[in-house]
Length: 316
Image 1 (tube, rainbow, N blue to C red):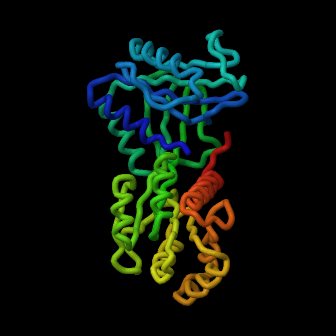
Image 2 (image 1 turned 30 degrees about the vertical axis):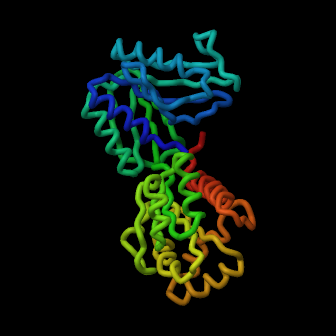
Image 3 (image 1 turned 60 degrees about the vertical axis):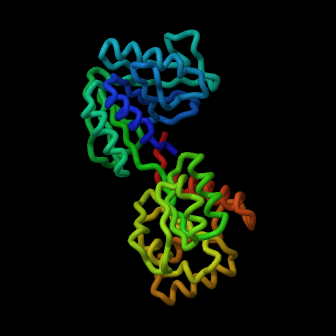
């Protein structure tokens, strides 16, 4: 996953504190690397930073370089690793990474970038290796996360995965804890007040379901997965129909194959088409026959992450 919101929140917050900042962008990789093109770091003039490009091999040098860029007010392109002028900095993987350092001194620009990322829409950030010009453009057909023509560099971003978790029981709580620690936001819908109370501080939204009917609270975008963890299947049919008719990239439900066969029958009876039913992943998860909540959550999250990358992964 490449959740860039924390990077741009950092830039916005530092700008509001009247600090100059630098956006650092990984624009090319030669050989192996721990991060893909399009990844970012950000550094403020007080020396604080967020993000990483390696396991600690280059970050200190990146911060030092960024502070020098703040002083100069000019963009800079630097290679670290093989072929770099920094002979004492080598990547253990043996490859190299090319970084573009872009100074940001405009509070309005930092706020605009933050707001655009927060809206969860695809975004192309236009950078220039020779000027401080930064522009945002509507996304277009792209072949890779970073595209370059001369000094012009286009960095394409899509929203990170998000989970809509519907259900009750400890599996809901386990999936929220695991997903948030991984960096994926969760919104929870449950008829169980105890579940809502347990996840309220971790989920970005936690709402009590009062009826098993379709609800405006379930409105997933194309980068959201819908997870059904209901033991009482009377709660799921109308909500599953709603999820399957949405743009969610993944809809999955727990239960045995026998349970899912019965589920398919009652969903068909309420008007869910065969094509929509084929979208449903069940039994959910990469690990078969999981029973305990923690393992089910791990199994589910792994499958969702794999599905997200299959749907939206860029060539690298």
